[in-house]
Length: 112
Image (tube, rainbow, N blue to C red; front, side, top):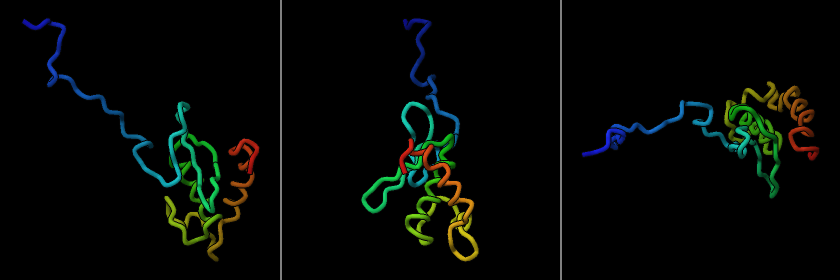
């Protein structure tokens, strides 16, 4: 007879993580190793721009969107609505460009 400590395969429930930010897929965003943060990087014109790591995938996706608009122009396909990033004249909002420039040294380890 089977041991009382064993369970049948049908009684074992597979473990599933709770739905989270990681269930969403964003362009230019990947998990950053063992630290649990999200990395944003943009590849354009034969080079890769490392935009930094972020607490959530959505934050990393927004950083990617801003860099993509700066590098590729307003016709780029973004993760979120492009109107979030543009002024009424179609240029990148000044506050977003300034925020990215001020954060650039920290996010890239001193490299631009």
